[in-house]
Image (cartoon, rainbow, N blue to C red; front, side, top):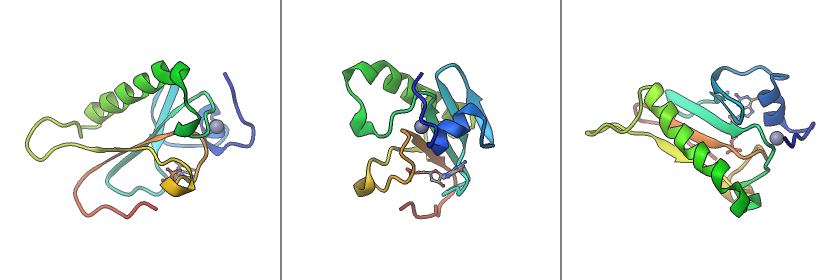
Length: 121
Ligand code: 5GP
Ligand code: ZN
């Protein structure tokens, strides 16, 4: 499993930096964003260090697929899944400075809750 000793999210995945985890398994960790933009704001990361979505290739398709399914599963677990009416959540992957990415370890934001939300980037 590739690991970057200088990467903040690798350190969080390893447990070297504390976080409020909502999920962990062999491949992924999910934890609360330190500056939540909404009532529910969770970051889902692979344990494997991949800097950005632009660094992904065909061989990362299983990982990316599992990551999206995990987002949906966590949304359900956190009570914010789309179940009709006004329910639902937002999934964001910022990529590079142009996309407002601040931490260079691939992550998906799972954001939900009553409006207004804080502005991101
Ligand atoms: P990006 O802008 O890269 O898509 O998002 C990075 C996110 O990581 C931001 O929403 C920021 O609040 C969050 N973040 C940065 N440092 C930490 C940290 O040390 N712990 C946690 N839990 N979240 C962090
Ligand atoms: Zn990393």
